[in-house]
Image (cartoon, rainbow, N blue to C red; front, top):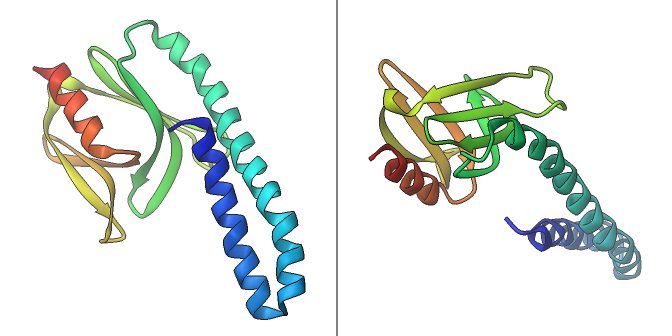
Length: 158
């Protein structure tokens, strides 16, 4: 995801707040809140995602030049989603949670242990899930463009 998309995410959130404030109060208050909320949340979201990306650049450097794909990901641990970053290397799928989680973890899934890959739906209707089946267990991640992750992982395995 490009940096300007992070900013746009914040702008959309600010616009939603503008509508909510307008409905709760009046048009003038809603517009004033929008003038404040749109740039504030746009900048806030840009900075948050940019800082996370910088932090995970260090992890990427540790993995070396063999990183084929990486991006933000949430790992589902039972019903809890743990935010972090997913890396695809020549041999492994590596997940590293970010420091803002209550539970921090890092683990690797050797590519030769992956039995199958599937797109899945978060909350039953959002198509942003990546389900990885390994022997008798499943690991589920929320990622941007799961079909591209599947394609890249399958290409790397074969």
